[in-house]
Length: 618
Image 1 (tube, rainbow, N blue to C red):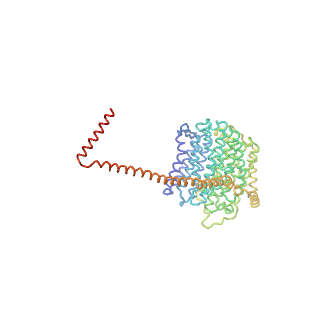
Image 2 (cartoon, one colour; image 1 turned 45 degrees about the vertical axis):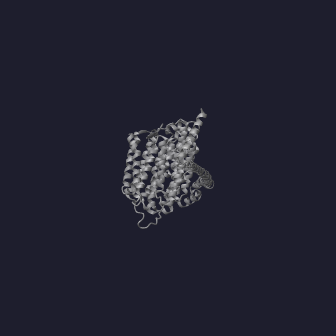
Image 3 (cartoon, rainbow, N blue to C red; image 1 turned 135 degrees about the vertical axis):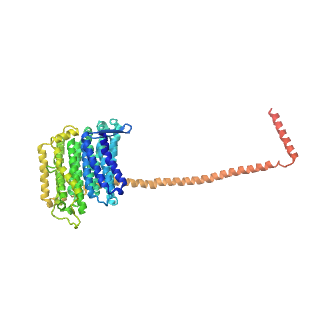
């Protein structure tokens, strides 16, 4: 079984890398290869979810690389691969032959492989490596149409925001090593740290999770990420990237509980995000922006569940949301391709034009609204039961977030079902290809079928698979209350659409620009950093550069002075030696007369001097 686990992560990573590297020459074959790879990965995921394999390999001294499939990661690998297969199948029709299909499908598979590695990682080093690849490929996918500067800026904004928060994982890893309680950096050992190091680990994990899952105050990056292709939004913002942070918090719930403060901070942040970003969704007039804000709000419920210790409810919410949100994004993408519009006012009658898309989008919308008997209705009650056990006020805020979700979901449905035809040329609004209908219908069926796990005995089985402590289940009145509120609010919005939506637009106008979160981030962080960078650049130009230039000029002057002095001294010494040598030569030539008697006299004088010296020395 260990070979299957290796194959689960290696297959999409390898095929994705090959497609992305080879590029345009294999554009024709890329869709088929990618869909086949995704389906094969789904089959492997189902097998390993039942077998629970575990593998470990050496990485660094005392820091092994580990992958494992347990209860939570088993459910996640099946969810990730299933949504990936559905999205890639839809993309075959959505991404036309004129696009760089090999690059697109390759990056999608790379991203999927990184997400599978993330959810199966058992140690922080492996998690960090997969986390980084996931961030890099998400940047490339959001900026897929890189020739458009606006899309490039959006990709940079999303990447830099999540990367800033990701630093929390590095801080957590350093604190875990410093504590000495988690030498191998195994995720299961992080809760063993004590004292101040435990608080640092908890804070680092929470920061990274909030950033990746677009929770307050990091939510604005998800708005910018909507510049990417619709299949990218369907994959990244339903079951993969944005739920990675929620998954990490669910996985490390013992760490949150052990810290004492981490659980409440996480739970209340999730609850507030569910309410505030729900209001942001209500204020949107663009369908993709509405879905983006609703993603933040719906993930807020998962984060709330992690903080309240309701791991089963949070997991059920994650899976059900993956089906509903990926379906909603795919239909929005289909309408954008068909009609060239994503503004709600321009999509009036879109559901009537594309009945399959309209009906499946309605299923997704009602699921997000929490209308019985669809999946998110029951899943949300399971996690809110844990919140009620923890704090009644938390339950009330969570229930308020659920009511708001009905408002924004039915608002979208009201627009697309209005009997006002979308003005289209004759060649627009063609029926969806069959290859695009299959994933939509499959995901719509999943939205209904995933209700069953929220009720006994399936819910109890899910709890046993997750391996946590027994969690409180919702009473009948909780199901009835949330269902009745969802139905009542949905009916109210549908019946009094124009009047009620006009009132809501005025009430939520302050939230239309995502409560100016990006403006606040720029004011508090980006602008100060840019000003600091400008000041450092000025310091570099006016102080450091001038000091270097002055030093250089001084060195040149010193060299010139040294050259002048040394030249005079050395030249004088050389000339003096030469003059002395010439004088000595002239003196030495004088005795050389060529007359024998003079040579004899010179020899006699020399021997006489030598004899005198010898006599005196002795």
